Image (cartoon, rainbow, N blue to C red; front, side, top):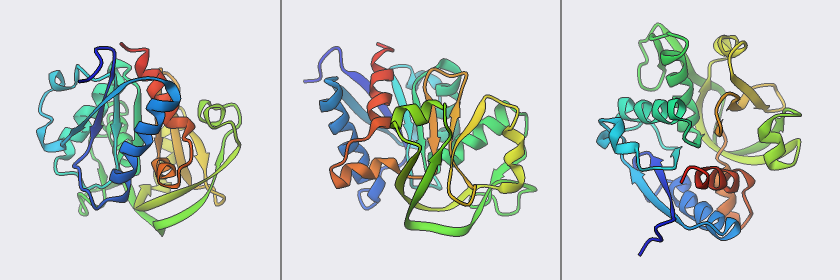
Length: 235
């Protein structure tokens, strides 16, 4: 039986047991539960079952997970928008990173034509495009900007993380976010955007890398721990 004080976490995405990140995320949350001494209730939210925001109201934290394209882009974007507008603690990794950028561009910047090249190859504006070099099953260093919340959470200026992605923020459109609260807080050594935080939100971090994979190596994850603590504050 779930404790009445358990933090309810919603995982936005279409569960597939063969996806490595989907194997890692429950383990990462289980470890965070132990390390934060906070009971959790975790629910997968298939994107094609997200039709109204009322179905999201019971969650203290939302995490948009990898393995896109999602069955319903509209469902994923609705949940991301809900987290952003209500101040719900939010994580987006890999596909979640990509779709959080789409949501912000469309609903905050008014760029309704912003699209994902994988979902809509004929669109006029590919905000999310193929990476110059595929990062499928690759690992790399990420340089975290000094003074950012993400850098303080990890307690390091350089981290080494795993990826499984072929798409990311189109470098031609990076400048769209330069004067907004959606602030780049992590790059790779070549200067490509790898992590972003929403500075006006209580807790909102998106990463192209899959930090959840730390759990498969038995390593602690400061970002997931911080997410759980932030969500616990919403009870």
